[in-house]
Length: 153
Image (cartoon, rainbow, N blue to C red; front, top):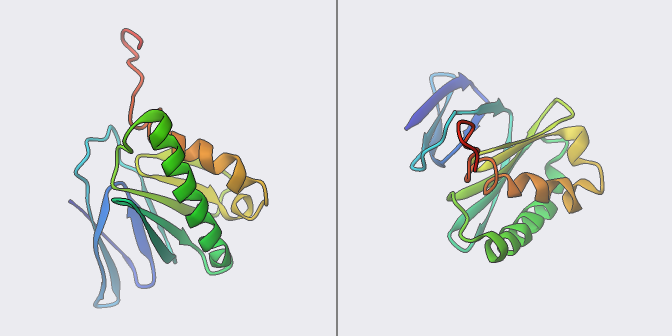
């Protein structure tokens, strides 16, 4: 269990499933349950608007800033398509959620159960058809099946 206390109006995102989010005494408290073993913990915090969609037993989510929230529906639909495609190709999805999380750097990073992508990048029209799938695939390759640096795979 991971609990993050941040300034009011902020929401923390990490691996696992969001168990609760509330405001207490001017602070934002986010609690995450992480059942799956992971090598390292990444944490993102921002003034997010959250949208969700169920894809079988997986929760697809977007954590976007207000300026990008109008793209949430398209990203959720694309995420659902990629999750279905990759489960047919690679096997069961190794986590219980996949979230597309916005940040302010022009980057794309794949973490266990979420990707962190810059807002300017999210707004590029081709990203949803190219890089998003690449980032989702990292949940199997790089965050699910790990590299054995000592002896190779």
